[in-house]
Length: 534
Image 1 (cartoon, rainbow, N blue to C red):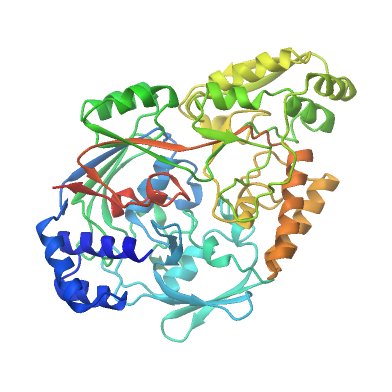
Image 2 (tube, rainbow, N blue to C red):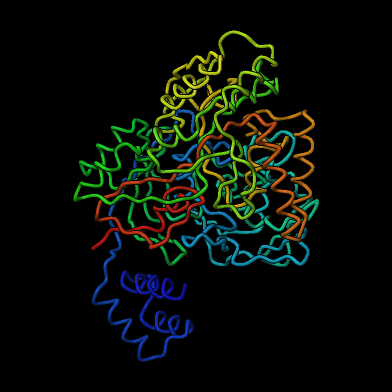
């Protein structure tokens, strides 16, 4: 950890983010003696590899013409990265994967119920307005209340009150203790915007972020120029361009031709070929990214437990990992908690393809006829092929699945969270409570399986609340394991695989030795944290 810190400090010194005195002071604070610290400083200047400036172009396999600048509506990686480019949050996950303060310089709680966030001083919005307590309170209230349509509404239902604390802090009191609450306020929806009259107007694109927004063309491109009042030591590019290129081939061609510098979602079947390109680097990061096929319980026939179980048992998961991910991933077990999460249910039996049991459950369901499965590669690369593989294995069980190929544009607004069964992806979340609260509890707008009303879902919701307040890790583990079991058995989620993040970038792009895995491309903050090699 010390070596990584010192290397990062050397990089900052090399590009001018800190001066020589600051480097030597930080090195000595880390236990380096003065002569060695001075030598390291000289080495940093002699071997500086990063440069400040340049226009970076990033192409993402996300984006929709329905995207907006209101973080409450964010639903894909393109809008997320544009949001991270122009705005900040109370906390953030650093490149090292650890939670840290962002607009909150620090935070504290003695009981997990009352949290005090001490705001950073001297931070300004792009319009020159200084960051205040009112901005934080109004920004969070934007996602709260009965009339709110925010996708983060469920994350903040636990908030009982918010108020100013002293001259520069915000006190947030929860209805019950939540040891993970500082993680929650790092959610990409909960960006801090300038307040006026007790409300925010996020459509103006103003934030405190690294880039000032120049252009926002939904589902096409977002551009920005370096904020002259940027307040973090990180930050190297002079300007940035975030392009939406949904087609994998077009995206890969763009980075091979040098038309863009970075792309995400590199198709697994092209990794070997792309790796041979002398001008490219391939990055793989293991995190919580998982691919799902949610079945909505409020759409027939998915309200039937036996039919849901029949479909879960009718899937050849290893075949999907091998043929869709080409091995760049791991088996899923119909719940969203990965081995990267702290309380992963490692003892839960892995569900396998079982045609006999699938046929039994299907017969018991009483259903007959075709079951439609909507898919588009807008969900993830290979989603249509994955759906076809599911249809093929289901046929072996006597179940007729029809794959409906949906248009890429508008997929997230016209198909996902609406149609009975479709392909989807989730980036996952750093904590179990966050993941469950984002997509599985009965109060979240993103409960894309509409898993409500069953005895198991009621038990699940009770457990999530109880585990959130439990400070004993052993007891929390027991609760979260049961939560995963309930989702896997009764829920509408089919989660056959967890996928690695696979990205490609030009050799001229530099990035930290370790990058955050809470979202792809360093937690969605590559624009702020990466650089051009000199």
